[in-house]
Length: 212
View 1 (cartoon, rainbow, N blue to C red):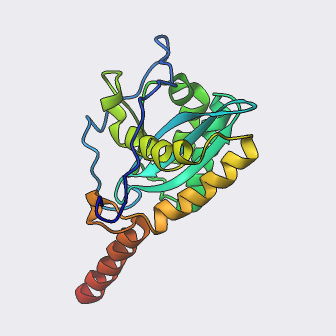
View 2 (tube, rainbow, N blue to C red):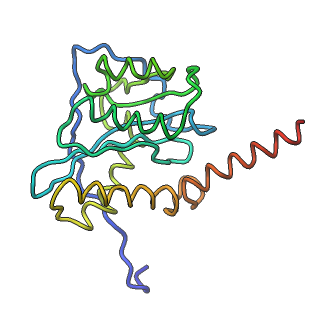
């Protein structure tokens, strides 16, 4: 990279956005910091981060499918409300159409937006098993924190300062499409998430044909 005059994007320090609600009843930790999945729609992780603009702070939520690190839902908001993270979840549900039989786990930190009644009820309606980090630190949701860090390093810090919400939303839309379809990820064999999922379904179809 040095010979080609290239320099990697560097991540800045993390600022904690979600705040735990000590009075809220939390689901079990079904992940225990083991962010691995054998197939798509087996484990999702959710979190959100912050973006500074000339008009004030914005918050960006992501829902990530752990199998190939694919971003399956996202939303930009002016406030850290439950509606905001619910919108990201709804996009993921619409895009992925999970079976709703409890085979999909949704994992988050202990932020009040995620452990509140409305979010928990929506997971129940969708037949998704909730999971919340048991120890209350960033390692409990490390994969989501990693995606947040990549988003900030590769887009927000490189192309800022940001004028308004519209500019952040458009740029985030472009970044998510690039991340899912073009970014090479070391953890899945230096291929994009969409390709990793396509490879899985191709193998699955081939195995099913052989079994038949």
